[in-house]
Image (cartoon, rainbow, N blue to C red; front, side):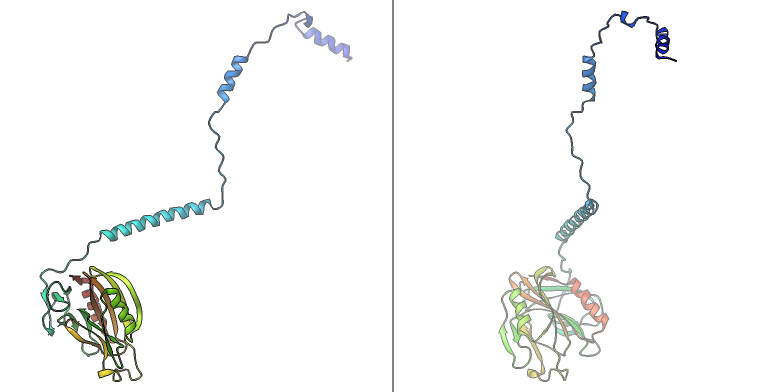
Length: 289
């Protein structure tokens, strides 16, 4: 089929014989519609940059959450600690007035120098059997003289320096801190736990744990008078210690400006049940002015 034949066929199919005879029709004005469409499609919200993801994002979020939990727990702990009431002395306590006499289970108190209230008083409760009064404390004698356990509460006037060999007596410090440092430096003690601030028995002060030194003959025969001297004060004017390895736990407390000593002692061969009873008594101890 030739080109002329194709054009003739298309012309016959067109309903308008001569396209040039058609009148010109103006294009419709779509400006308003176009503006409306633009207004509808325009998003005038501020553009926010897409955050960049990091491989640390997950761990950091976890760490932050853990820190929040830790801080919350610490705040709760401190609030709980601050709100914890100080223990009160056991009511109806009996005064200890005679040394080395058996005492039954019950509540007891002792004044640090035997002069009555105002000198520092220790009140505690004994639940077990076998205890005896020390007048300014109590002890379990034990079957062997070197197995007993004891609690002593006293004012200190002088400190031995050193505890063995040509002992000299030094005036006790006037504060709990001074007294603690004297015990730490003027004795021949083996320091197991150094002087450290502590709140104990209702008072503020310092704590220290020491062990008595040993000699080749495992005795103190070489010491002056055969004794390892400790301190003097209140009722106790000759506090000395017995054998190497003896453990002494000290609390030096500031009671209305006066240093008061709390001493707990055990021996290497002290029965575990006696040591447990001593710890139970310490749990009930309250020191008051």
